[in-house]
Image 1 (cartoon, rainbow, N blue to C red):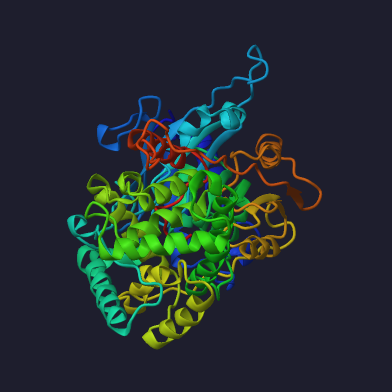
Image 2 (tube, one colour; image 1 turned 60 degrees about the vertical axis):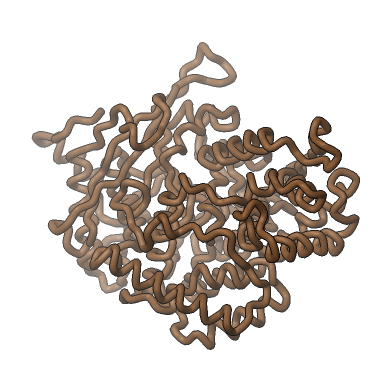
Length: 570
């Protein structure tokens, strides 16, 4: 644990190194004027304070619900970087120290390379569980060399949490999810979006405007300084790649190594309205992939031998649930939400297919198990939704005329009906947002400005479509793109593809990248899981087994870079 205060000349020199001004002299400030903005100056002040204070790691508070092998601490950041002496908030941080153990030769010690900070995306996701990933075989070499550090970004969990709605009223189930909504239904959702936006302002007050991607990037630099790191080693997945790219633009001289896993398209014209339209289009392709897999295993699931026949089985279930929700809890919206998760991760495919098959054969229990609401998670889900909405709405301009939303989503739904309207409803509060919007930063680095960085992407990723990785690659001069060809898992670093993991380890452990962009063959598709024959003739999966699988999957989401934010947009 670092000393709380640094004294004397040595301390002053160390502090100066930890909070060095952005690279490139006076032209490095993001406003391009050659002078520091108030926020840039505030970021330097906050980093100086964090470097002096350090982070006092100790036993994690019980409220975090974390296992005992994690250490926890906090780092203080300004709510408003333009006023660093004003209100300050604390971000929770977790850590597992580098083991120093060579996984191939236990007698050999591995030199420590510093801290690896990770963000799983969202906006609205917490990385507090991330350090546990070091206990997985794929991550042990990295955990040997690095302190693995996770944290809850501003607004998330106990890090100055945001709320837009009473959590008791957040989970609405059962509920409808019309593929082609009526005008009456649209009016209902517009009213809900307006009420949600008002609720965000009422429950969060003036602080709401300060929950932005730019502030997340500035917070990351304060965290770097608090950890005692002169330069940052960072891995971000999904949304984490976006504010990681902002960090690379704002603080290029502070970067040691950066991994962008499943990259958001950083084009300012895409943030965030058009990115969400692109996402909805991409999910249609991934939904087709999933149906094709089910069709290839028709002997197991009996849902149809072609993707079109599987779609008819799915639509049959939607119609039945619209008329009579399963167990009074699962309607069409809950079904769609469960199957949307399968668009993120193909290891969900067997469980989802089994649940749909069992439901259509008369056993709704597996479907209720995976798709039903969980009241115990309502507060966490409401918090995640509030942070997601605040950050995306604050970050950029959104159309304020409903006719634009109606036109764009109606057109898209004709060719991509699976997610289009549900995605629109999730983001619609941004049309009525009561807080001034920011102008997105133009992510871009010049030759020699940024150390080499690594971009990982799956070719058929739906949550962050592949052209986003290509766009980020064009904008970060020193980047190398590694593609998992033909695959669609969201977040591929440290997963089942050993080719991808080889590039990741070479970069993080040795600083070595391929001379040119590289590709990897796709990882093996999931194996179809036959129903438990101990069950009745309907062939339904044992609900207890389904629960166990679900819990294992949820634990994996907390531990692996493929983390998502409860089916939210990137």
